[in-house]
Length: 368
Ligand code: XIL
View: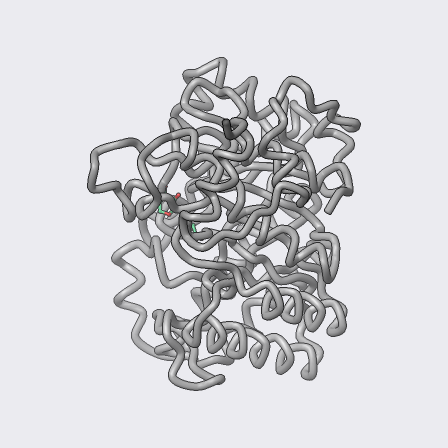
């Protein structure tokens, strides 16, 4: 009779073309009961700081949620709070309540709050559509960054200055995603934002954050190439930029381009940049329903992603986009057609660790 471990490994092989041999570290990791895994280091001593995105509702109302964040995280980032939509209800108002509350929570519990985000096409309040000229765009962008980064100077030490600059399917290496800033200022808005952020807080780590650069396929290779072109160009011109954030919204149904991703990370390191994982989760809408198998497939995908990164460099931080399946953005875009709840995150909806948490632990220990 097949052992439980062999059955699972066979299922993993059959599903989505993941090849996991019983002898591989992932095979052992997934087949060992959680309780039997002696985690050598607690999360506070993992080799990279681990963290998660915060949602304000449960943070205010649910002790279990707060406890899970405090137990596992050294860093946090607001799912919202520092986006234009939240900070800027009108042209002349800045509303910092949400971000202040998140920063207070982080500080009280010995965690760093990351800043997300200063330049993004998404989550823009309607009034920004009336920005009519290049001069006006420059004025608004500079004022926003000076005010927000200046307010948190020395307290928010890492900023996603630029979020998602590359289009989904770039037509060339120099293609930049449309936004009000791109429309009014062209690509120069990127250097302007980075320079302004550096002036407002010279110590802050400035990050360009991007998604969909890790999978096998032409579209994803083109995205990597376009991001590489942008980053090289900025470094060449001495624009302040310290790290690239790989969001890591992985897809259960898409294989990781192991060589392509490792090469990309190496390239970033050779340009003197750190690499962070900023928004890890595994979109599971196309995976089989059975939760036990689904959780394994999710973990296996994240394992490949983290292994390819680690093959080139240790990430400067790893953050997941939420901590529990109870609160995740995934169903907004990727609801399952069978009506089952998505399971993209390290803890289940009862705050129990899933195989994905064991994968994070594994890399946190320094294992490959
Ligand atoms: C998402 C949040 O999780 C949602 O709560 C919100 O409604 C929309 O934005 N990439 C990003 C994040 O950079 O800001 C997005 O967050 C998820 C995709």
